[in-house]
Image (cartoon, rainbow, N blue to C red; front, side, top):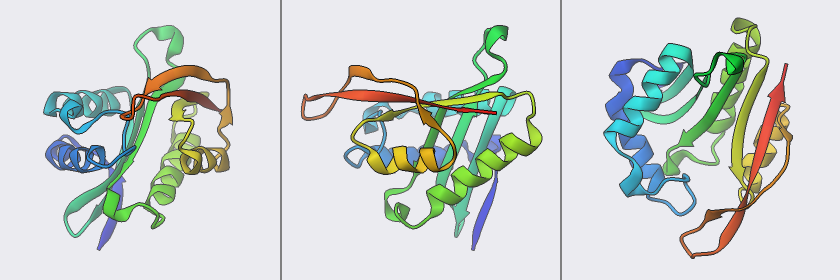
Length: 166
């Protein structure tokens, strides 16, 4: 049985497992497996719960997807959700879970957080599927951060900042 719901503090251990699995696949996340720590997971979950939004998808008791974003700390940015990250377990990528999670996330922002006027994210240039997904939800490419990513093969790649505006 699948359940899409808001994240809570009790999810941290299962989100950690999800991120470790996803980071173990080439291009799965910007961080590699060794950079996924309990502290990293706890930090973004805590920030998302206190000043943002985080959702998970559970299947048979396991968290197979998570999405989050939160307000940056300076008050001048409190109309923004930033640091948007979506993570789908490698075994469930390409099955529609990412679209379902992203759709619910954006619906909550549009319906329940009227004070959020902007959502922003950064996508790896080679991740055309993700960029296309974000564009389908109204995100626009806002530029190019040249040679920002040093890939595993030691090849420099561009990062693409994208934004959604209310």
